[in-house]
Each structure stands twice: as C-alpha cells, then as structure tokens.
Length: 389
Image (cartoon, rainbow, N blue to C red; front, side, top):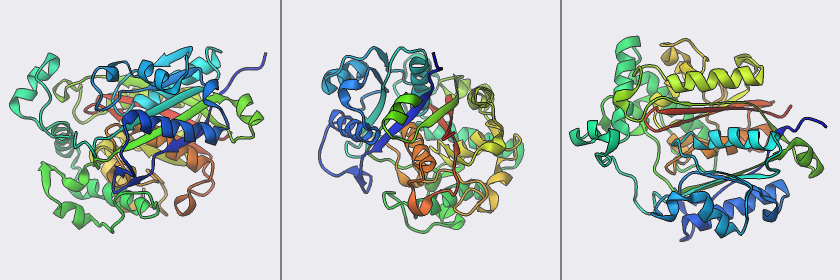
C-alpha cells in the first residue's frame, strides 16, 4: 500500500472592513463561512469531514470550553478525530502537525481546521493584567500590561545583551507595511517609515504602538487530506514536509532566557530535521508578528541568523518586497489583521504563495515555505515546512 501523504488542499479567510466583519455575525457563523469557502476551494463537501480541529471560541463562555463539540454540532458532522488544543497563536500550526499525523496514520481522510474571533467588534482586547490565579499571581498584582509588557521585557533584555536597537525593530514594521500596501485586504496600508514607528506612542518601553500587532476581527479555515485525494480532485497539493511543536512557560517571569526563544529553537529544529531540507531551501517565511521583537527573536531561534544578530539580519529592508528574504507577505499581524490568535492566517498566506495566487505580492518561484506560530508570551512555538513538491 502506498504511503499516505498529508497535504493542505483548501484555505479561506473572512473579508473584513477596517478590521471588522462586514455584517453582524457570531463566531460560529464566522467559522461556518470560512469552513464553507475552504471546503469549496478544496472541492470537498462538509459531510466528508471526519477530522475537526479548532482552538477556542472567543467571546463564548461555556460552549467555548468545548469548541470541537460546539462546532461539530453547528456543522452537522460527527468527526472521528478532534483536537481543541490551545497553545495560543501557535495552535493552528500544531493542529496541522496533529492532522498530518492522523491523516498519514489513516485515522481520518479530511481534516478541517477553523478559527474565528470578534475581538475588535466586541472590544474584548485589553492591556489589563489577567486574573491573578494559578501562575498569574506572580505577575498580575503588580500591573504588568498583558501581553505587551512581557514582550517589552524580552525586547529590553535583547537590547541589553546584543545591542539591538529600536530602529532595527522598526525595520520589521516598515517592511511588513510595504507588503500590506500590496494587499487590498490589509487594514493598514498607509506609507510608513522608521521614524514613523519611533514617533508612535511608547506603550511599554521599549515597544512603541507600531511595534505591536493590530486588534481586529477575523476568521480562517484550512482543509487537509491525502495527496492522492487532492490530485483526484484536480487540486494543487501543498505537502506538509516537516513540523515541530514545543512550549516552555506561561508567565514571562518563568521564561528560561528572556533573550532566547527556546520553544522556537526546538520546534524549528524538529521541523527542518523531519523535512530533510536546509534553510537555503526556504523561499518564503510566514512568521508570527505579534510584536516586532517576536519576529527578530524567532528568526534567530529558527536559525536564519546567529543568536544576537537578528537586528542586523532585518536591517536594510531585507524582509520587504524586493528584499532577499521575503517574509510576512500579506502584511502580517502588524498591518494586515490580528484577531487574537493569528497562526491560521500564516498558513493561509503560505498556501496561497505556494499556489501562486498572491498577485502583486507574489514571491516569484515560491515552492517551499516555512510557517511559524508563537503563542502566549513567547511561550509556545510551532513550525510547519510546506512545499509543492
């Protein structure tokens, strides 16, 4: 019997206007719409879905604690494989890893991964400290702004150890905005330069407002199946060549090293080893950009540059359109959208790049993409290496 190979065969996201849904809807309706569109993209009917993966139903207490059960009832399906794991923004890359294992083992034939959030419409995002329970008792009572304060601590430590500058962090925001200007669906498309980032209000020293991701609504879906099934449907299969998942801490105070992204080091190493390729084989990178420091530390952790040299690596607009290292090609969480957990949109953009569907922002000849999600406060990391061959 031929080996089963897991592939991405359909993707979809929800159109937004200034970061909000176009009409009132619930998070269930959001996910139903993107699921419908992703399945149509794949040429697969909802009744064929036997694997369901999701992470949280934002704004829904009670049912939000059992998201796969809630969604399966709403979709009218009875899946054989389910995963509602939540490791923050990296959850969906982890779901791809888990779905690939299930498909390749023959436990399911069609896996559907969904997410939806109304955090902008519901004004549900806040810098206020989280409830001081469990481990949060060591941070919340002292007023650390959540989550930006934790990322600011990491940024300050990285600057102290390696001489990283605010200008270097701003390079990331500027490059990402240039990609957003090529994406008509991006929320922020006005021109931006380094001085503009540095002039934006300081929110949590050393991070400015424009070092931080947006607060938007959003919904996305990814459909996976076998390569054989994808070809029978006449679709371009996006192979899941290698994956890795790890996490190290919840509270920033428990991070093993404030200037080192250990979870990403582990997940990236595993993904490259399992894919059997080198960094030079990667054509495009979609990397979680909750904050500019997230990107810089992730690039170091994944091995694209030595530790401490992330600032120099991103300088000179290296990651911008026309640069030698295309990254976050839809505008990222900094300029495109960021609905609470952004990881599914990294996968959607990577699939579209590999299928050559991105118009003016298309990376020429893109055949292999690295997608990396980050969750919590630099807490979790999940890496997927995707390829058309």
